[in-house]
Image (cartoon, rainbow, N blue to C red):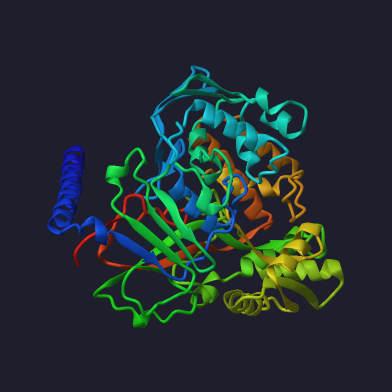
Length: 510
């Protein structure tokens, strides 16, 4: 009887999904697509790109523009997920270390073919120490990449080769399921040479039309391999906000009054991002070298207290791995007051004062004020908030000249390990000064685990260790909200990588 009930439920679910799919298709078909001359989009109040070199671009604005100018092996699709782009077929060897990519044909705006050799030259340059790319580590699992980075081998020894023009072979030092997803990141876009923005030779869905201090204008690239599928003819990205304009697309600023939105013509999209903000102690400095003190703070945290201070798309979280679809391994337990009393006894103090580094920013000010009030519920604890400009704050953290900080992390690639490597003992980004053999062993074990699900289980254990020892105290996940004209459909919003994807966007009659 239970089996029959399950089958009926499954069939009803399938019918509902099919209905929704057909309904959506019919709804779209009932709307009239605007002619090419009206397929335009203006984005207001958006940051403008600063770095045209794909190997050096670290700001979201540059990465977003570059992702529309170029197309690599993989791309971010309409739903924001990673999908094959120039990869026609992927085959892995029996031992899982050799990836063979069969490529689709692609040409640049100047008629040059993008071939397997294009990617080989690009990968070699990326790992070359002379390039000084912050993304060279993304190829660390490719044969010889580490030795090249250390100057022990030449870039020509990297584990990549061209079988022919359309066949690229890549050899890893160990089998690693899911490695190909990393290749969607902007650093791997096939840029033949880095030039000024308006001189770039590109192969993606759009080209730069013009760029100045206030506006970037793009137009459809007619030489793009799927040009017939790209509907938008022009995209204008302006740094000046104009939230009274009821057309186009608008990133919503932190303090915007949502009641002013005309919901008849505009819709709001809240987009979670991969970034996570947290409290970060320097575990070498007293009293944060006492795990019980850190745990007392972590257990005192009431994240609901800061909800009103967050931007619309941001959400509180107890996870460091905010991209993880599975639940955490375990939660920290204990009595914060008892823990803190023990700390005071060991310090032989009735009063403990700590400094909390924060940003010179209105949202950060509100959050740090709420956190101060929250943490000072511990009897005898005083929290002094120190606001610093971003550059000064980062320098203090990197040098270890701090005790406690409101900090954040935005992963560079779509794997859970991206959140965790910064806490390894020898990692140059380990400003927490955390050192744990057991933690390092977990990450080493994850690196040699081929199966993605098994690897992620190990990484969740590593996260649990950080949370149990209160090495990191997660507060909220980053997010961004957009106000967009309802006439536009199929704007993609990835969790990681470019801020948005316009390759599939279409404009309809309202």
